[in-house]
Image 1 (cartoon, helix red, strand yellow):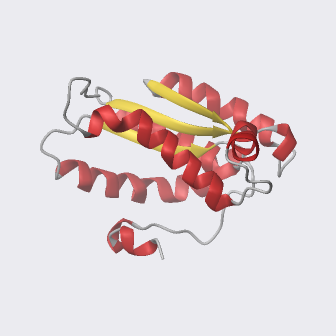
Image 2 (cartoon, rainbow, N blue to C red):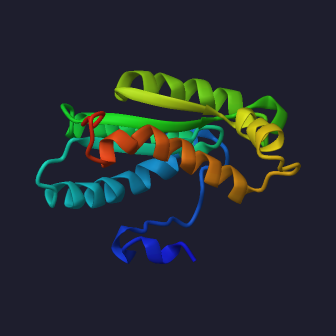
Length: 171
């Protein structure tokens, strides 16, 4: 249902994932697809009249979000060094962990976030679950609930970038 939100030329998919492994996402699977991703980004950036920067959205518990995400940020820094890069990153939590290697992926990816982003908004996965349970009275939050809450957070944080007003800012 959400597929129609995006232009088909901008959708990129691969045949395999990074299997919860930062190294696979960064050095093997990511290396195979990063040039295609950067080419699509370049085409979009070339069509902009006043490109200010980039937003990156990822979860760094798995291999694709941490490894490929790190590789992409590194390459964006090389290609667009002077442009701002803002990251919205979901950090894993031990209570809702799905893979034993999440802490390793997180540590490796955090180094790249520190080096290659201007601002990173870290969202704790466990805190999202707690907000759903305690504040929104959702006993067993679904991914839809978590995604909507995350979208509300990001929308609130970026409102001053998107709308005119006294608090309007740019990147």
